[in-house]
Length: 146
Image 1 (cartoon, rainbow, N blue to C red):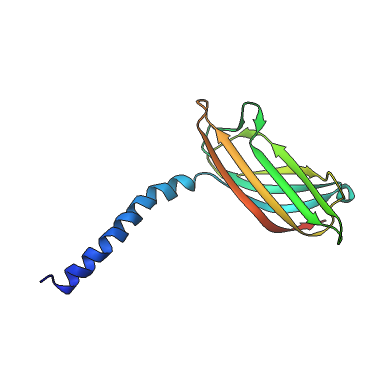
Image 2: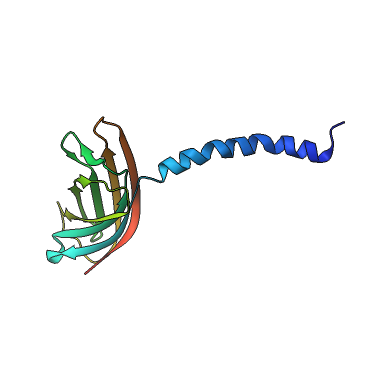
C-alpha cells in the first residue's frame, strides 16, 4: 500500500508539471503590453488625447507594412440618443522598456465631453522578419478630463 504522503505527492505532480509549463508562456506574454493612463478633452470635445503606457521587444517596429501599430478607440454616451466615437493611430520604434505616447482620437460623430467612456487600446509590433507580437486592453472604463 502507498503511504499517504506519497499518494498526496502523486496527486499534485500533474498540477506542478502544468504550472511549470505555464511559467515560460507567462514570461513571454508579459514582454508586450499596453494600457491607457489618461484621456484629456481637446478643442471642446472635437478630440480626446489618450495617453498610453506600453512595452514591446527592443528593435521591433510598431506596425507592419505601413500600418500603424498603436490603435485607440474611444466611445462615449453623450446623451440618451447620441454616442461620441472615434479612433486614433500611432507608429514608432520599440525600446524594450516601458514607453509612453499620446494618441489623438478625433470624434467622428457627436463631440466628446468630460465623464466616463470606453477606451480600447491595441498594439502590434513586428521585427524585420515579420514576426509580430500583440497586446490589447479592451473596453476599459476611463474618465475623460479637461
